[in-house]
Amino acid sequence: MAEKSFNRVLVTATVCCSIAFFGITMYFWGAMLPIIGAQIEGVDSLPWILTLGIILGTVVCGSFMDRYGYKWLLILSCVAIAAGLFMFTFSKDFYMLALSALLIGGGGGVLNSETIAIISDLYDDAHRGIMLGILGGTYCFGSLLWTIVCRLWISSPLTPVIGSSIIISICSILFMFVKFPPAKVGKGEGLSFVETLKLLKNEVLIVVSVVLFFQGVIEAISANFSTSYLTNVDGGISAAQAVTTLIFMTVGMTVGRFSLSASIKIIGNVASLIIFLMIAFIGALLQKFMPTSYPAAILSMAFMGFGVGATSPIAFNYLGQIFKKYSGVAVSVAVLVAQVGMLLGNYFTAKLFTPEKLGDGTFKIFPIGLAIGIVLVVALFPLITRSTVKLSSKHLDL
Image (cartoon, rainbow, N blue to C red; front, side):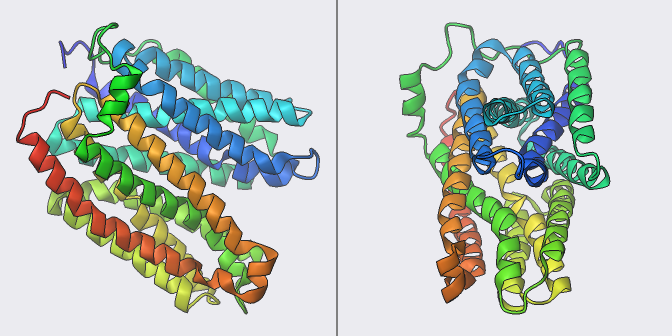
């Protein structure tokens, strides 16, 4: 990085604050859909529009970050989320809600990729994984706080939306006074679209993207369909209990992301990943063999949240080791693949929970699918370390 004319601690605090806003983005519609579902037709498609916004934000931000720097893109993304939340409170029809979802998703998609890229640039190979774990923990904290606040204000659901919009707007103004790292390449030096496609041939980027694809599938379906599985098995838990288990999943992920930093420091990346994913594997087994027990369901969801949250910070740590100059593009590509994994995972898993599949019991293979996905990530991960060592020895300027 060029001259260090910025305060690394202040930039890190700004980034962690921003990723908490993305946590609100990811859990926003889950809290709001039950409120507006009976009022406006077509709202079931809004989570898809939100995801589309996240993907679009991820696609456009990579090259922009590398060429023009981080500051104003981060501020504009926060403004987009604040505007989307504000628009939601005054939406009277589906189209206004759709635009609100697109703004919230687009801003969140940019923040997700940008915050990872900033941390990757700010810290060296020895500390990057630790700081990415803290960043992930802050994201989980934002999600958890949003969920709790929405439960507390259940009788006045728009209050948290308006309050969040005001807080994010104020933070956007404060961020203007923070000095960020400069752009890593000149305005005419960034990767073109064709060069970005050539980047896809990079071995580390390919393997990291594949790992994050499966991680995205596991994270999405465990969060979105575990409750359906637990309530539909014979003698399963109640819907109210199932919703409560989601809070424990968020708590588990928050604890997991923060403790990951200490784990990496003590036993390293690979050992940490294996231990965390084995805990998630136990969570999947609990769902399969003790689905009717409420305490086991809570433990299962907490274990799943704790374990699956470890993959992304460690994977992005390896990506940061190789792509120092074009980290924005590399991170955006990997995040995009993870988002596609989430989309496809949700789409195909939903087919397990149709009335027909619920009737014939096919849906009961769900925790087995979770367990297989976890094993796949563990099996694929050594390829990342092998590829990273090989490319690092070539001293490539990426």
